[in-house]
Image (cartoon, rainbow, N blue to C red):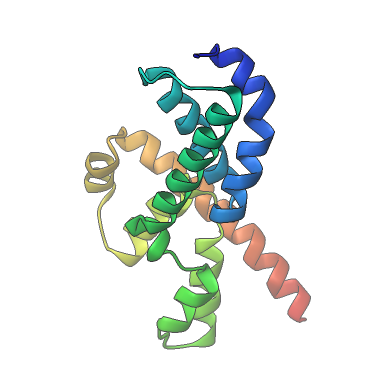
Length: 160
């Protein structure tokens, strides 16, 4: 017995998501697990005895994929910004505040600002590393600085 993928997705998608979410504790990873589970069903040549057999197989595959997701290097070594900040040492409280503010910028600005100011790369080198044009790097630096200025000015005004 082999059912169409559309029928199974409609019938079991929510159940598989709930199972995967319980293991992963993360909605995006659970969605990936569900998608991978249905992909595995689609590419598999196995015949099933009944619909209960299909359902049990889908749940088992989803659980195994979710466990594998939790075992990845990235998931095992991930830490929050707060945990990472505790491992760093700063010369002054102002430099710690600045670093924390930089880390909260959108990624495209945060990366170029970090490379420019903390790693001492030139605009040309950053452009090569990120595969961007030099003018794009300059624009991102300028916009990132403007965002930093805005955020830090608000904090400065709040302190007065």
